[in-house]
Amino acid sequence: MRKITWALLLVLVIVLLLAELTMDVSGAERRQLYLTFGVMAGATFAAAMVALRLAKRFRSLRTSLLVVAFAAVAVTGAVVAVAALTMFIEPHDLTLVLVAIGLGVGLGGVVAGAIARPLTKDLAAISHTAEQVAQGDLAARTGVERADELGRAARALDEMIDALQMSESERRNLLSAIGHDLRTPMGSMQAAVEALQDGVAPDPPAYLRGLGNDLEHLRHLVDDLFLLARIDAGRLELSPIGVDLSELADEAVEAITPSAAKRSIEVKVESPGRVAVHGDPAALGRVFRNLLTNAIRHSPASEEVRVVVGVDGDQAVTTVRDQGPGFPEQDAERLFDPFARADDSRNRESGGAGLGLAIAKSIVEAHGGRISLGAGPGGDVRFSVPLG
Image 1 (cartoon, rainbow, N blue to C red):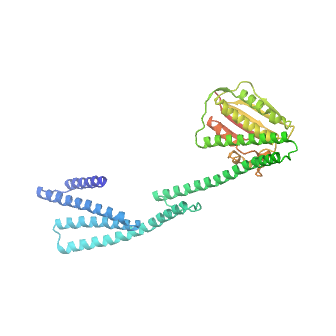
Image 2 (cartoon, rainbow, N blue to C red; image 1 turned 180 degrees about the vertical axis):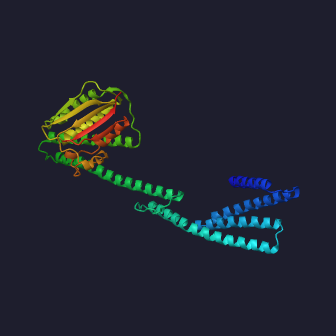
Image 3 (tube, rainbow, N blue to C red; image 1 turned 30 degrees about the vertical axis):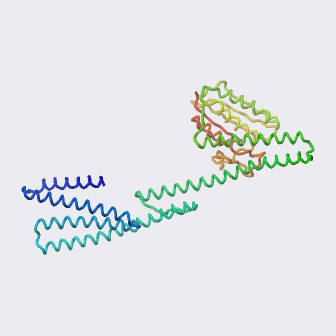
């Protein structure tokens, strides 16, 4: 209401200034002119208030637009009619003016209706799409193509539905993947426990070691899930300090050696010496262990896994290579997604939980670095972080 008042006052002042500059009016004429225009401004304000209240009660936007259009033309006609009466136009001429105003009102209504029809149709499409999405139909789209604000709103709604559809698909895949990776060790544990309870386990110590391995697998999976949840929520907390990347590589190799020895895999580190970076040693150590675990899992028995740490410009570059089958080129980006695997059979021994690369990517990028898959031969994962 305040904006309408100020707008009417501004228009009134501008019109009166134009009248003063373009018309030679006397004192009496000036008073009459000011009074006439002031009364018309007040009447327009009252008409605007009535139109606004009526518009809120209409259930159709098209009706509201038609009312607004007719009100605008009617106000224009009223101003012209009052001005004509003030100028003492002959009755015949005044009648002609009023008829012309009536024609203008009718033509304005036709134009307003023509404009309102596609507008209300597109608004109805947006409203219907929103209702469909609210009922769970993520295949619905507005189909609205416009260059104005309504078109931008429709595109924003369609993009939001696309994001929801993708999130829903990812959620289903995530639940399916978690269910599989929990079901496998739990099934093995259940079978082992039942065998021990029934006294049919041929080698109870071996069964207990198997239970311990499955529990360790579940613990790592839960830890990875919690870490991934913190990363997705933007709550990955880093404590960066000056650290030697070569030393972190050595520590990771030492920690992973027992697993590698089970398959007679030798892990070697190649480094020019100290490679100083500014980062979180625990997080970067996690990157090394994840990549090494992945490399050992996919490397043939009795082969070699190499960790090469070097410097390229202002970046510390690390490459982890194995002699396995490598990564399919078409899956290069997908394999950094949670629970993604090059082997979609999802065998525990060959695929793991599929979180290692996703976690490594998030940690490296949190350090301002990049990670990618090399062309091979064999498995080749390289990441870089800024030198400290």
